[in-house]
Image: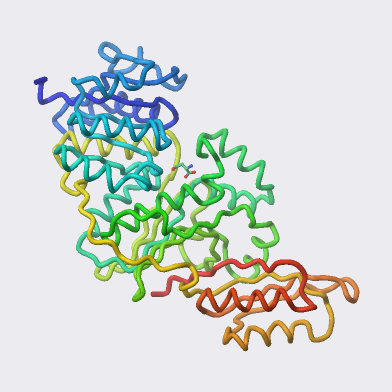
Length: 435
Ligand code: HSE
């Protein structure tokens, strides 16, 4: 057995988060020692190639760190106490994590896809082997939101949470809105800055946010992780027009992950959302993330910080390593409760923004409002762009009151079939987070 005052860490994957983690552990080695009374040493790195942002020779671990090109050499290293999995993906990563847990090593990961898809099985495996699988960095980068739900708010019955949990998507919407930039150029910049996933469709189609939301929902409501039940809609259909119309009604469009406990079951959904300007989530711009959590005892709380990037995410990875070094792992032994019903998107209730292309002719608006009133949908606001000449097609924007999504969809079908409308209606959900 090696010296108990030294914790040996192996890092698998030296990409953006791997480099951040290594550099923090090296630079802050003395500060971390003061907090833990343990020396946390990176003694093995598994990486297919070097990372120019990591200078091992100048680091605190220069004398001892071994670099292997075969990443499985790291998990096979019996000297290690903790394996840090930072390769991403779900195939090899699952093998690495399974091997490490079975061989009695604690695992720290930033891999939201792995936890969302295989977390239930892997937490059980960790428990069976008397080790922990820690994943603070998997959701919202540097914001300690896992700790908030598992520890800080543990006495509360959580009624809902809502978050901007994909930095790339938020960066794109912010740049489009504030600078009038086009979608593709902002996405390219997010990739160059290291925010986007290897496959950026995960960011813009909402899959990354859905991975994260499934993890948050399970912690908030003490249920097993249920990624397949998260409704997911991306930001690729949001246009400059929508951003500006929303603004004129006093809203910002944010890509939110929302999880709520309802009488019918749990709702979990990721989609673009109109949020009233007075809500603090509308102030969260660029790559920043934020999560709002409503607990019965504490009320509404808000957590804000960098949701992506080498050291912001590395900060969360290091926090898990430090907890394990201290033996402070109680809340990481995730004990999910029983399965619960997740409700379908048809059953949710919210307000809606509808953008329609309407032929500017007498009776057009009347026929649209007749469809809505027959469906018992009340109009809260309406805007029709002035037509440059008679009979041209102009955008009409309608803000509705809260209604069940199923009724809204039925009304939209009927509106799309009217003679005065053209093409498909654009529907964006609105949330006020009043209760
Ligand atoms: N691609 C992710 C994002 C990285 O943009 O938020 C952090 O999980």
